[in-house]
Figure (cartoon, each protein chain N blue to C red):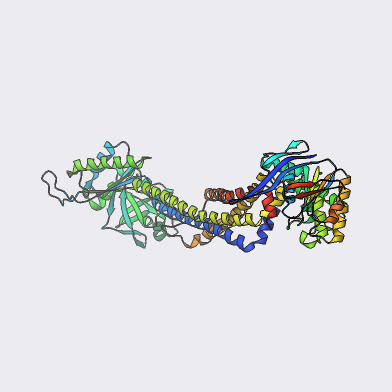
Length: 224
Length: 408
């Protein structure tokens, strides 16, 4: 499903060169529930961005679903992000002037699905998340847990192969965090690969496999 | 274009920054408003001048007698040139290109017209039939003078509506006799002229005037039309006829004061060129103003893109293509420009329509922005909006999603 070999990434700021990823080799199979852990600066967010084609890498090979993700045009990258990947962020990243339903429906807008149809689908997903009654509310009128559910619904609506979550519980209280993790496990059972970046032990313990990053290399990729 | 989501987004960003959008839009609206006012005023001036010309035939050339200012073959300067019937006959015989040739002899000494007990002082002008075309006269009833009137020196008169109303009141003028210095002339026609001054007159045959009032064969001036001659051709014709006069009346061809020529074609074309120049000038000023507006809109759009960096990043993360982002920014820019510009357009046209009745004068009438101008202005607005949005849109499209998401 995900195949990384010898991925290198550095950031150049002025005269300084920061080598963030120093040769990542990683295979994640379809349907896995994986967490990536590491201290800040270990390169875990960078790795997630590369996995999500939000960022490019300097060296190495990245295959997603048997397609090489290298030197993609913006248009191709947009296509893969839209069709294969769903994102869940720490700060939710909902669009403030759109209500919950419209936020969820947005990925389908970029697939050219008409308004009526995509709003109907969005409502189904909100129902699955248990927040159908909030469909007409703006993000500012919702709690953190509700917002994250909207974001998850948005990630799921295109039926992606993999969901990438970057500190999905970082802005939530522990009770809500557990609920969100239960939701993730449930989604994972339907066959979607889940990759969660976190630094909370509680969260990583609830995944099947923990990948520990340290100074840009994988220290440990054990199964729980 | 008619995608409700895009409009919803544009509406929401505009709503968030009402004052900013208003100020930006205002600069564009002002630009278009000024352009319309300037173009309309230019058109008003043009209409006024055109109207002035239309009082007479625009293709007429008038020749007046003068005084020599240069010695010629032993003749001293200061000689008065006098036109006679010979000038009319020879000019007619020798110039095939000219039409509607008419001599003119003003009857100055006898100016009293009367019908029954009504008296009035009006210009009595004796002419050939060509004057009908030269003066652009509209015959309301009966007919204008004709060649037989001239040949037989008939005592007939064509009166203007103004004269008829003053002397005949409600009575029928046609067929009745109008007394000119107590000599009865039969009224054969009733006319109207575009010029107020030219309505204060009656026309009689030049031959009759010479026999009855002035005696002799003298005339005051000659006029003719030159078909559809261009300005250059008319000047050529003018010079040719001037030379004929120089030969006949024995004055130097270079003498500028022996005869005076008033070439309407040349004047008319000059004015047309002048107005083309004014129009171009107005467009340049107007477009300059609009460019200032474009820069304003472009600036605002850059700020909008900056403020929406994160949002654009989110969109890209969930699959927005660069083209869809460009489209969004461009559409917003065009929408602001077109909407604001349209308000300026409507206000400009409205103001012109409103003040139009109050500013009518001889040299300024019917200021208007016609359909063509409105269409050009609209096109200009859409192009402006696209130009204004181009740089910001490209900037937005080049945003990397990861950078956008980092932006807090």
